[in-house]
Image (cartoon, rainbow, N blue to C red; front, side, top):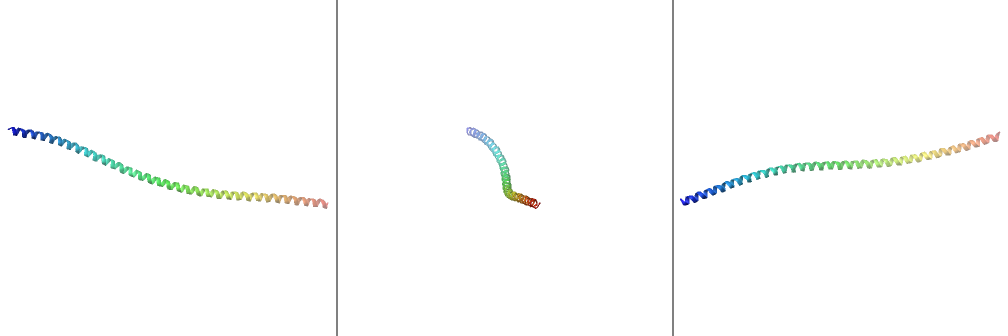
Length: 124
């Protein structure tokens, strides 16, 4: 009877410990489920961040390509401007030479006219 009471007491203590272990297992299971959910959310966010990084990288490469093309076009435009400027300077030089020749021709014509007038005066 005393042994039976001790066994009964030991069984009750084991049942209390078992119930406590069951609660701890349930809590651990809930924590583990929460952690798995958190890990899944973090993996989803990481994948989204990876996609955004890839998109940013593509956009950056496109911008770099566009910048290089624009630099090329700008260099070509600068070269064309330089060519136009040279041609304009050559044309201006030619105009000035023609104007100088025209003035010279005018002076020659004036002198010839003066000589002709002088000859007419001498003839009269």
